[in-house]
Length: 273
Image (cartoon, rainbow, N blue to C red; front, side, top):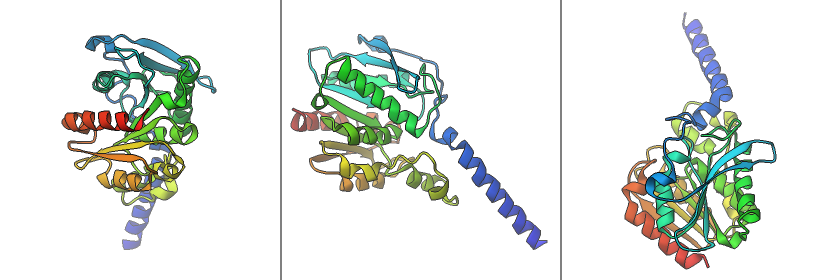
């Protein structure tokens, strides 16, 4: 009897591993939470914007908004959001960067919002590359005029892009060291190092990034432990700045709004020409 019970447990565990391996994109990407529908636009907060569709090299259409600063500047932020919702759920972020006097390009990865396709690690990298090329080719910007910013999952995407293009600055907010390590926190009984396909190894890319880096993270983050950003910060090259926030994973930047905004303002003024 005991042997049968142990075999049943082992079989269940094996089936669970196989199911997670093939369905992990559902856990990593959540474009339908709360919805893929756009629920607002920058005009709702009084900002002019351009709605764009950017064509990727693998024939997907990436939906994006370009929000110009209220006064003329070439400093532009390419913002890469987290793993749920879409750009219409990021109006607070759009408002913050606009108030900082910066142009902003924000995109939805493939499979998010109005963008076509299905998300994957490689796909998100291609989407970020496409947005970067739009700023270079269509907005006639140079790399030293573009700040790449990523929140949560977007930090993993931003680090890959920054490694290749060396922007004016890289901002990593609430970002993991790797998807494998953060998955191990949430699924401690699973062999995550063996089954995670979308790895986003942020920490291993930082040694190859040679632009100013700002890392922001909340000590109260319930999804990605604070120590992930501490380790990322230790691995990053100088010059670098750490902004300690309070609040949860999704709202730390709002809960600590003054600290967040002032920290970004000072860092950008000090480290971006």
